[in-house]
Length: 291
Image 1 (tube, helix red, strand yellow):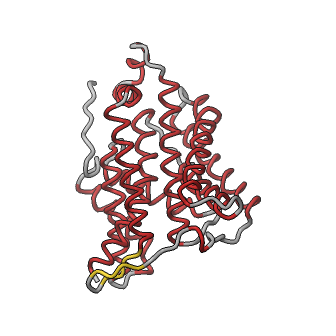
Image 2 (cartoon, rainbow, N blue to C red; image 1 turned 30 degrees about the vertical axis):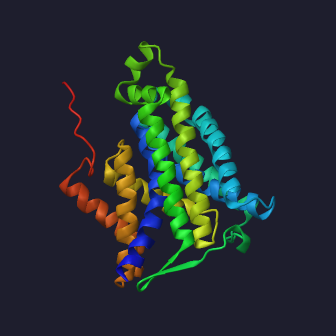
């Protein structure tokens, strides 16, 4: 059953990676941990559910709508909650992020109720593929494929486009980038939009995978994705991808060998072990500062 559990872990880890990318990009640009990112993931799942259930759109159009909606929401959150505090202490920005997180989850509970909602059966007709002793669903393959495509698109944007070059420059030195004529406010807003879009896609995929969307689904998913970002090296895009995949595979294999009660603890135990050995994460680099 190794192959089946491996596919299960990669599918789950791919969604963690999509969320972790938002954490690591925002931290890389303005050294802020956006703890409202998990709730953006949750909102994306609800928007996707609304598009499929009420407007009868197919899954891909619903995902596109969710990504567009969360891109706008990410920009608005940055403008209202984070930009005024950019020159304040990090604690102020952290408290603001927690406040946005609580506000979004409470609003979702008021609008959609406390009970979990499920995607209709027409959202995606999953089929089983038999490979040896493994039963792999086409839904898992879809999640892996869509996640890989989105990650490749992100890598292309960051490495090959003008805005990507501006993002990398801003992450190196915020003030110098501004002096060189880069519109850092636009770069930061674009980073929030990009990360929010990836989180929304992850929310729709997770909602379809587990057929459950609830107001508090972003809490644990966000914490695990943050753990994945730190595990891979906070600020490193490849590190976030690797960390998400490793956590997903480790979690699934931990459940498979009989530690299902410790499912949520497995990710954080691995995080602690790695940080004890390599505090910068797997792909993180040590930063030297002149004193």
